Image 1: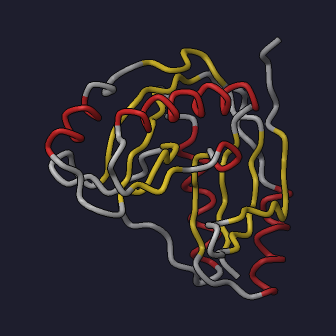
Image 2 (image 1 turned 180 degrees about the horizontal axis):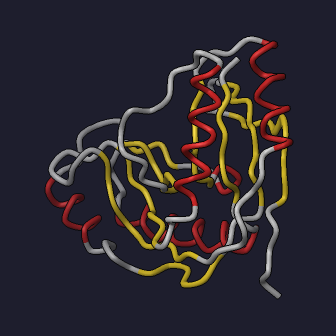
Length: 189
């Protein structure tokens, strides 16, 4: 079973990200980019390719008992890419002020290692994927994309849920099914 652990944003934030994504897509006409759907915006903490039922139950129990961090605010800034600007493969929005997430990410990784599951070796860069580039972008498209770099999309936000998802692949794309969802304590009024 393909699964991942993610942080979900409130609906209004996803709406703003979606509107931004729509504007970005207008600039990227003629490209081969698989754009994320509105209901797929999240920050991934751990991606687990194939886990069995026993591992799924252990992860669910762990996440259900996990102490969530106190509420903290962050902003969302557009746009950046992986692995680099001269040949982008993933287009994303990044978080600023994400330091309170680092202990949560480390705790989750530590638990996953105890189940002998692999964890990402790359540095943790919390982000929301907007699209995956399927065919190399032209210089013109990269320049257009760079015009969106550094834009503050949402100045003051908090996460709504920690969610353990199953990811089911199909011809229409990935479908995310929540296996466990925990609401973050939230001090926004």
